[in-house]
Length: 165
Image (cartoon, rainbow, N blue to C red):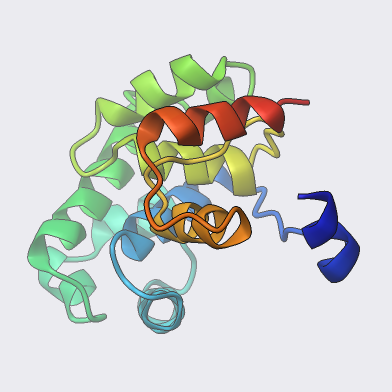
């Protein structure tokens, strides 16, 4: 890793402090390319005007789907907006919760799993100790860095522990 840091330098990650907007972005980004995610998220922002629970709850699921996602994802977005509006999802308390609590809280919502919660912890909450097994790019990068053809979960966890702050 020291060799990679020396070669690339310290990486700066952009942070998205608006937890709701970040959560929606992460739902959109599930299992699609970065470029596709940028396109779909831009369309959703154009449609809604702002990524807020109020605006997304007011939109029909078909309009959200028309931004370039499946109906299932559109319904997950509507569900997250409704949960935020009803208080079932209190994003204000998430910032103080442990990593495990963040994952448990968010995973109760349809369409949100460990990967989505981890991305929120990395890119919105700035958690320094999240290395996502569920992120294929991270696993591929680790395999490339350490010159492995495969990366079993056990080996991934050994590497992950090395990076613990």
